[in-house]
Length: 194
Image (cartoon, rainbow, N blue to C red; front, side, top):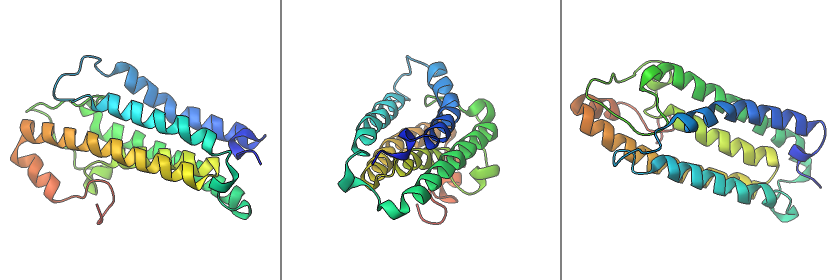
């Protein structure tokens, strides 16, 4: 049985949402500094290679029958995946608006940078990365494969965790105690948990 992202009309929905969700992401990657220095610690490259590598494996594995969700839940899980992809992309876009000029594709921090505490940043330190993890998990769900979903969830968590460590070091170095206080009042990715 084909994964639903390859079955008409589900393919139309999935690929339209996929392109809509990732088009702004591609623009961010294109505009990120290619020569990011020690501050970025190649975190953009780690994220790109890690996530696209996981997707290159996740898509073909979605065809393996033993790695699929039960057939009875196939359609429900597909729609949950599509909805999660939309929700993740909307949260990412919200975060970009909240950060304004402070948002960059690579890690940059300066002493005059404002700490954003409104919107999703009132609850989490890195809601944009929460959204990114949700988007990748959503792809695995829409593919109908528990293994693909787990693979991209673990890969995205690992790559975003690396990015978070790089970013928090840079922000602490640039902003000092105000950012340390911000960190102490919010969880990283999951409200009240982590």
